[in-house]
Image (cartoon, rainbow, N blue to C red; front, side, top):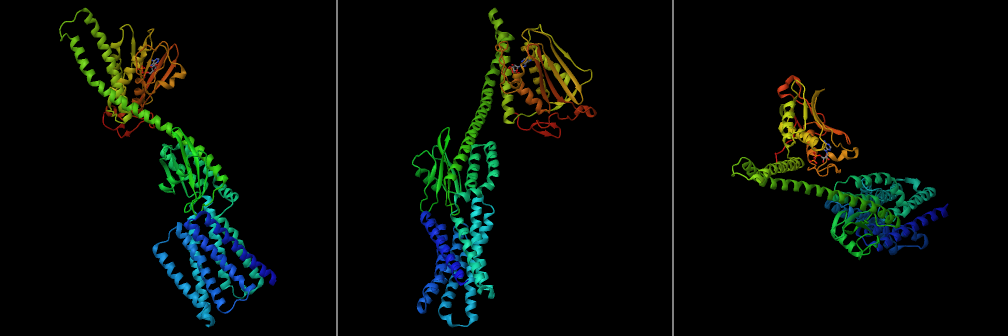
Length: 625
Ligand code: ADP
């Protein structure tokens, strides 16, 4: 039994010596402040364990015993005090707590010195009290960080969490043994109990070891728990991030989680830091510069004062960028599996960044188009007004009598000027719509009147041969709409019906009021539209290109505006077409309630499409461009 007891004690001492040596090596590799402090703590623990075994091999007495006693007590207190300093390196203590710790340490060292010198012959109560103080200080120094680490670990990525918990658990085990040694009473003397406590202490060695140097396999295992959640989150990030910047910011956050890293960064081909987290600008620049242009990703050896880093290339359209992660006190190790993992992640980030770039460019192009619409239309309106004035003066003979050729030219000029005017008005309206500056002026209207006026305004451009038949109910069709806008919508449908029936054929306009919905359908017997072409009709500048219609003038804005305006009214435009036989376009509008016909409220057909619905019905707010 005595042999077993000695063996257990020797093994434990050896275990702690090995632990101290491993941590010393780790510190030598990394030279970080935090690693240094943990190294002092663990080496001190190794000294305590080793010195405890010395009397078994050589007899120590007199002055030597005092020296051994002092060293033991100092090393013992240092082993806990440096755990507190380790915590302070990355979870800083408050200045007051730091001060209090120093005072406690000073007092404890004094007590320790007294214990092995002047108090060695004092009474039992005094020596027990002194020993009690020494152990209490140790428990305070080591206990506070243990609790802090445990709490802080809750919000950390799985690898860092596991490592922090391992450290907490290891030291908690040692505290438990110490406390048991003090309060265990007689049981402590029993060889069996000694063996058990020694083995428990020994078991703490690998647990503490994995906290600062976990093998790759263990890191992989810890990460696995998070893998599914991570994959889903990364997918979200790559698909839904609205901008490149947003994506980059989130990507560095996930890179840290994925690898359990301390910091992460993305730099673009110019070396500009696009996003970073947990690392400062200077370190990013240093790490990227240290690569000396080598394109392949790999592990950057740790430099004194800074942990290891992995940097992997991003193949961006504008050139080679980099995604990197760096190690911290709880991530001092990267291995080949981390490199592979980062490479895989980098290719996803790469694709995401490229996608976001394309989206951003498209948005910029769209914005440019709107800006162009706005500018061009407003710049054109002024001169055209002047031209219109002169044309009408020419027509009225106010500028003198024209010769025969002149008289023939004026109506052509007038028609073309009208076409230009329509185009410019459409452009202005489209620009307003996109700027959110389009304001409706809804009023009580009889849809029959609006339709008749619209048909009339569309007919002057007719060749006079064509018939536009309008069929309306006998009773008024009450709608609460912006009359001018509805007339524009209907006039465009009618002029399209005529324009896209080059062979002629009647155009039938029907107004019906049924089920709370007022409808205006415009039916022609013209070229019709192929099913595949239907989706582009209502897009901005969307025109169907066919041999029969290519020569016809048009902007592709009429239906786009028509549908948008209809939707702002809580309505819709639909189309039904048969290629070669004709089309029917229908404008749907909410009918006003009959009970209050004069200023009736409208039901909204497409509540989700209307931009703004006020109490008086759907209205868009804003200035009228
Ligand atoms: P525009 O007539 O000025 O080109 P619109 O936005 O009014 O612009 O119409 C978009 C496209 O839809 C037209 O270019 C044409 O190809 C098609 N289209 C519109 N109305 C009809 C119709 N009644 N019959 C056949 N095609 C039509």
